Image (cartoon, rainbow, N blue to C red; front, side, top):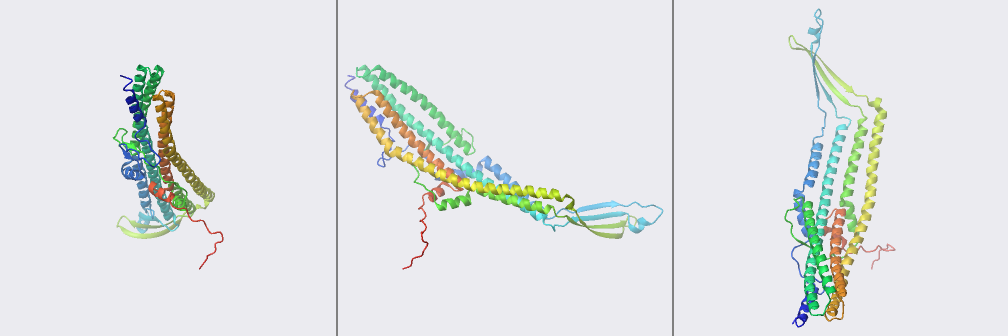
Length: 453
């Protein structure tokens, strides 16, 4: 009776050995799994909520608001100084009545040397630098969100693959036990499959925990609690082929957050040099003084003064201060040059890695998966007819699982690096993909001549 039902059991096993999401070479579409496809559009939509409520971004905005308020509150003119006093005279003469014994005055520094306007320019430049720091932090947080989402999607894909593989092993264990009871198989096959089931069950639980941890990191990237509900994610299809274009390089040099921040810091350092240079100029102040007699409150005389500080005594110290700030400006300028070179190298590196990841994903989908599926079916057919060994089936199964995981890892790597390229360029992933997939610029003419007909 058991031998009679053996072909039916083997047929069921062969169905289980072909996972429902085997991706043939552009012929059979994968069966969709539940969850949200982690597309750049979805991540961009979530970055809106990220911009509104992330505490780190709110902190950076608060610092920008503080710098902006400091720039707006920079004094255009110094506060005046009021002087009040009295004079004491000998009671035997009449000087107190003649000259007055109450003294009052007002001193005011004049903004004629440009110190106040230079200080205001420094505050405005620092506020602009704070604004670029907010932009750079947002770009980094958006990349962190994309990276964690793709890690979560990859972890959940591993859970789906492991779940299907565990179902296959359960059927295989039952088939091996049936073959053993009917003297068609061996106890070693049963034990080997039982060990595979134990390993797969353990691995599947570990993959589930990793997926839960990845979802917690998604919440962290969104500025939420770790256990807040997060939807299930699925990996998208591989992105199109990308290459370096002049438009992409130009946008990166203009919008790159690192270059923009260093440019704003250079302007702030340049404004600081101007403040230090003007600090060596003298302070000019005008003063007014009046005297009156307390006995009859009558005005006696008034004085107008003009005061001038003498900074020449500290001329050497001012020169050292100016040299200090000039060296800081030079350091920022050199950092900008180095950052521009680094940006071009990083863009080149990211484009290479994106192309490599796409190549691996396409190879796994179009070549590895169909071949390993055929090898698995052939090994299963040979084992079911007692012409093959269980080890061949298990080896083919491992190759098939590795091909599926290799495709998933390559897709996650490609999209993660694409978002990293977008962060370097200061663009969204959609804009970066559009520029990186545009037609190459036409090669320049060798002669440069203009031909007319």
